[in-house]
Length: 110
Length: 110
DNA sequence: CTATATACATAATTCACTTATGTATTGACC
DNA sequence: GGTCAATACATAAGTGAATTATGTATATAG
Image (cartoon, rainbow over all chains, first blue to last red; front, side, top):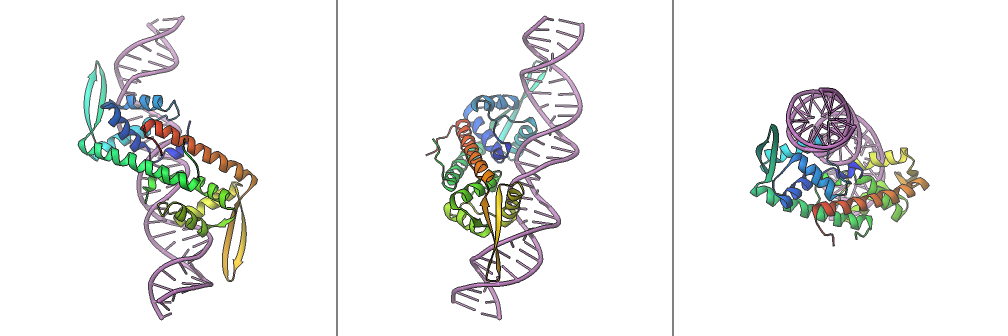
């Protein structure tokens, strides 16, 4: 598991990118996908996940669709047109940040 | 300039590594070195820098030496033995985090 | 003689997160 | 048929690393 400190500021980027790559998903599904993709190194907590999804929706980057699965509620999230654009920007920003950090820390990734 | 959000959690790592690479330095010098190394993309604020240096010193990772430059005070910081070890760990942890993030975000660095 | 750079420091505030808690359904195991 | 774990949502309280603001003081350039 990674020090949660480093994760700060990356959650929105993760959510946007995962939704971009995997289409509409519901919250719990996102946690599982991220867990899988990261080899259990990134475990999203619900207390961070849901408020962030709500925030991204309020900002118009995500749109929702509520589906009843039997008696159970599922809330699907998908990128809006604007969300797709921002997702791209955020990932690029992250890559740029990594490059800067690599230089400052004098480390070589890969 | 990078979104300051991404920087969270990386400040200690930056300070420890810069001190490891450049030997004893004083606060202001560190800000200048990081600015230079990052091509002005990383600008450390004093409000973050000094409390973090004090904290690392309190934890025994840094030791200090006060030098008078004419009438001006300079406080030099250097890694302790333990600090050198932790510096190495933190950088390794960061590299590991980047690798995980690269997989999750499906991006290729370099 | 004034603005900028150098050099330290701390207090108030912000805000993204963790931790804790709550509700409810579904499935597996025995 | 009872219990535990997994599924699935949500919010509130608390934490802590940062920003922003402020303060002090010396040195230098124009």
